[in-house]
Length: 351
Ligand code: FAD
View (tube, rainbow, N blue to C red):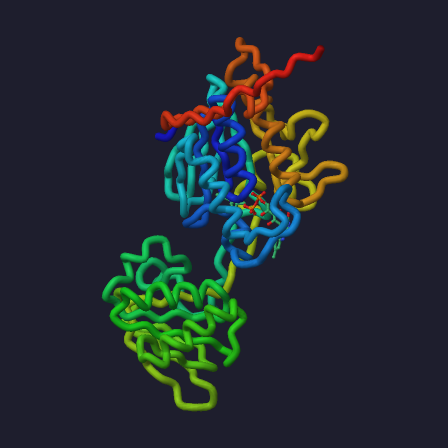
């Protein structure tokens, strides 16, 4: 059982910034994300693309923005439940929300902030017979722990950044690694394509294109795959793991059934104050919410996070008064004991 002040569903940029804003108010946060790493769309869809409209960053790579957000909120020691989907929510008689994931992890908090973006990202699965049987039994759609692939025979399929990045990373630890793609051209970053080509030239990996898996073989677990290679005869490849990386599709998923007011796949909130939903104590911030004039931009999500934390403070500390202070004046006291305090400005007297 995980207990916290604010439970954040979604560890995208908005969820991560919420940890910082809540921390300033001495509120602890825990984040749940279906993905194995934080960063939401920025990490998963465009980590190497530059963003130009983050205030005070004329240009920043989406992946670097996530790294900076993680660095900024680290002092407030957020907890993470990664690789799990928030599935169910109930309000207990004592007013506490209890959120359970698809893996059965239970979280309790007085306030829930849904920062679920476009919804949970679900992997695009290849259309193969008996694929369900081999899932987590030789087939993985994410690389949660690279060590699981140490000294194994691995097949990766896909033509985008994830397929290229994991090929590069796992080629260091795998016993053998084959990358296949149904086209000869890859969609990923040019430098990754070049690195993969270099690994192939050095015989560190096998690269087979155009090709695709057509059947899965193995009695109890995956033992081999049959692949179609252009117009040639099909090949049988012995593998311990097959990692199809064909991208992710967002789905609102279980959040649809939580009794929240939904409009066009988004959660309706009150934007006159604090982005609260129709259920008091549950807020929705970032891309997942809707209100008149909503802009699905990171900077708008940051603003919404700051506003909702003020209301969360009042719910969690009904008897305490909160006075807004500039961080330049109050400094920042991390839960890990770090204190950042600016020197007091010297006041000049006015004659
Ligand atoms: P997300 O980043 O979508 O994160 C939500 C997280 O919630 C996800 O990780 C998801 O897995 C998780 N989640 C959802 N449901 C559940 C559940 N039930 N259980 C557990 N986890 C769950 N914005 C800009 O401001 N400037 C730009 O230049 C810009 N460029 C973009 C370029 C591209 C290619 C794309 C795709 C988007 C771009 N955006 C840009 C939009 C920006 O990425 C989004 O506004 C931002 O990611 C929203 O952040 P978020 O934290 O609200 O949601």
